[in-house]
Image (cartoon, rainbow, N blue to C red):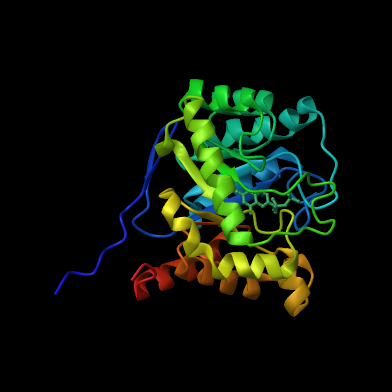
Length: 285
Ligand code: HH2
């Protein structure tokens, strides 16, 4: 009898090293913004943000994702200078005081370039490196990048999103972006993909995507999923964003069972504990 095929261990290269995905990794969210949907204003003070980042590192975060601009539905972009002013002290402080790899959550190449010089290793871009300048910045620095699927722009993305087959369309989009970005000089090994839960999707689209996540396995790149506190959880089960931890943990666990390698979460301690258990039970079995 043939031995069962074991899933291949994926490796994700970034500026300061590589992440070997032998277990589920947790990416902690650090929003240095006044208006993020679930923690807006809580970490706008750089000292408070830095302490929260260090706490997430202690709690077992594998990556800390620092963002200075909200991309919640309906949000407006902010100037690059303002975004950089917010994230700079936090990135510099974390790079000095922790070894956890840092990602910069930005769609602006100027901010990404400065962040990579200040200690970030990965660019988390909700526009999937749409701007050719962003591809250049990532390629030149030797950074890692996350390619996320978003339909349209944050301002309007939730206005009647439609798909024929949401999983197939997102897989095709990501496949195309991987090829384009690789042609621009970023090696495939430096790329991870993200279906973009909540980025131009209805509640039903989000559910279909989570159920069909294994459809992204053929991309052969690490799959990042962000469900933490998102509105589909409130829509289905109620609760304000900071009351959605139970639903977030179930959705993250389900995503891992369907093939996610990295989960992006606000509540790092709780998420790490949940992921340790699902991994021990054999998440990839
Ligand atoms: N979700 C948000 C922001 N960045 N990046 C990735 N890779 N995946 C996600 O699902 C994702 C993301 C939105 O969440 P949050 O950062 O908490 O909110 P806001 O955009 O309001 O700051």
